[in-house]
Image (cartoon, rainbow, N blue to C red; front, side):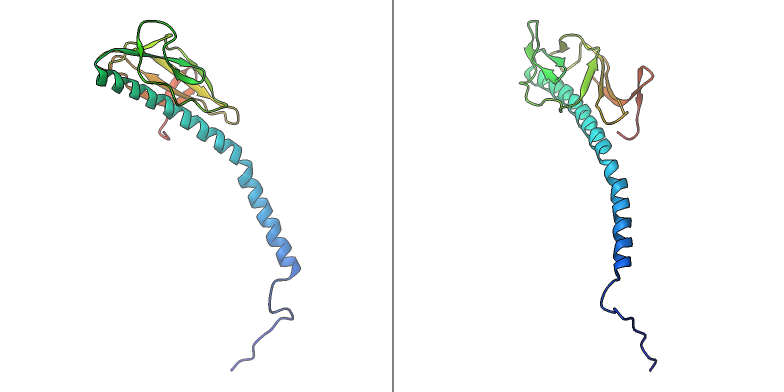
Length: 163
């Protein structure tokens, strides 16, 4: 049987090996943690965009369910009850857009939905947030209220396959 080779400290790692491992781990963690704020900003943007879209669909369904026209107003914090006009709100407002999101849009003051769920007004909403250069958008077309979400750039809402 061949003789077994042994090291003086056979039971563990040397101090140099531990220091090298810790240095590598610190460098790798630094790369990962530097991307965390951008990831959270992008996630906040995606959630806000999907919430806007879901609320439009919810308003359409509610108008059709009731068989009565209704309306909603898009403010800086998300959808609210109509500020003016005789339309009943489509739903009571509960969800708000997340903090830190910047919303701009060209929707009219009151977005109207017909008694059968058709949209009487269309437009584009644009969402951005600090921490990422990504800008998201939602376009709503007439009369079906079909929404398309994408990346905003060059003054237009372009399709984004990552959505």
